Image 1 (cartoon, rainbow, N blue to C red):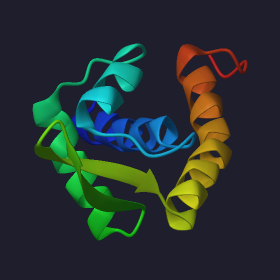
Image 2 (cartoon, rainbow, N blue to C red):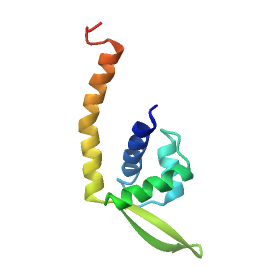
Image 3 (tube, rainbow, N blue to C red):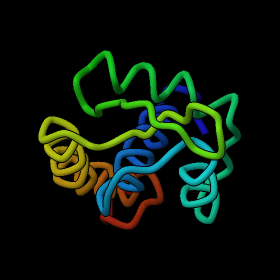
Image 4 (tube, rainbow, N blue to C red):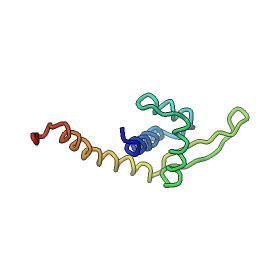
Length: 105
């Protein structure tokens, strides 16, 4: 899969993992990892990009004597998911065209 396409899809997956509420890195990896291969070394740059874009918030809280970062989705992040889902239909159409399913062979 194209690296840029996969990166964009993983960003949406991370946002989707946060729809139900705040979470931290390891939990996000577990949620997304059920559907796509992702490691913590891949996740953290994605989280930084999404934070810089205003798609998520970050807060720190103590957990077992250590600081843990919790990430939450913003309205902008929710809109990114909605935009992705609406644009995905175009990707499905392109896929069908490439596969020859539209009678253009």
